[in-house]
Image (cartoon, rainbow, N blue to C red):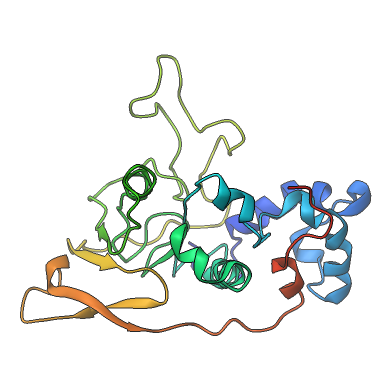
Length: 252
């Protein structure tokens, strides 16, 4: 994580490596030279259906029995969770009540990009989606737990995705194809200061519901929490709002 305003962030590395593809004509752009205005988004529209996974019309996916679980860390320093909320809401607008049968969104308090952070960030979504597909019952609360001290090897963490993959095939090591070979922080970015880890577990409920302390048990134990009230987040109108509409001309 950057420790001051003049230190770089990992996001700039991603943008610098991909901008030559996403702009028409392959014109490269540096993140620090891009103007985030209407003209920039107009340039992105030509290749938007090709590169963006934001089409809310999941009718074909639903017909084939697909199940979709979205998740995002509230403390993600690279991609705002508002993006994922915006897509979730776009799916709900497009698909209506049918979306309850195949889509869920979980927002992880205190979690960074895909993992790590101050909040508990160990959870099993694969088991949840398998149970949904094979058993026909959509998930409700997902239990999250604190990362063990010194835990590593997870996507999104500096130092993660390097070395042998646990349970991988013989001779396979490092990140999967298409990911960065070296996930260390960019030059000038310091590792986050270490702090004592409080072991805790917590249920996370499908958005927009939040966990509420039920008491009088230990607040660091998931069983002391229950489903609270709905607490939706307002998604502001912005230049990319139209990117969350159904793609025109897409063949299903």
